[in-house]
Length: 303
Image 1 (cartoon, rainbow, N blue to C red):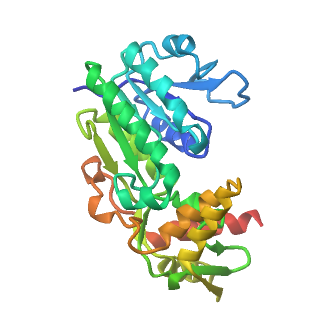
Image 2 (image 1 turned 90 degrees about the vertical axis):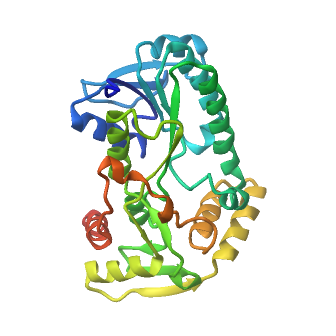
């Protein structure tokens, strides 16, 4: 089976879609089409075809997805359900592979879906996609599990580290292991996947840069900074409870509390290292200290 050539991306300018687009462009193997809302002000390199319109309109989507081999959905969590109309249009247009907006925790693990109920939307979309693919000759899917975006989360303080102030918040002593992947590595995984369309057909691709813990990250940050860090200890279970309460009260920030409370809580599926199967694409583990130093130095340079 020859590599896919024409790739469409929804969310091509986002935090996730951007690195995916960059990785695809760097191979010089694909013609990329960015599907964007009519109101989008995002700009793209001249080599990318941009089609703007109503992403909920079957008519627009049917036209935009003509002659597309593979579709990558890098939508936001709040727009997960909007994938269904795009999936329907892609099936009718003859798209061969759809990569839905998983890109995160291992939703094949029922424990983590129980702890983080809004992940059920991802499960529901994938089940819908499975149904459509069974009824559509030539259509397949691949789900991507990559854990937290390591570089984005570490640089933004989401993993519990204030790089500029040298302060750390460790949950449950920071010993729980979790798998995590950098955004460029996720992009590389998508590029490699679409270059080898015979692989990961109707199954999940589990990717990670490394499996680590807050304690190991703190050690890497101390080495990168050459400084001592002020450390505060908190309870992961309490953060999960706080997240549920915030969401119940309409505060969307509770979502991060739920996700990372579960990530830092052992036994909730954050460590999926035993399932990692990306080696067939040539994606080997990265070095924690090297990546952490690069992120740390980038944050410090901004300050």
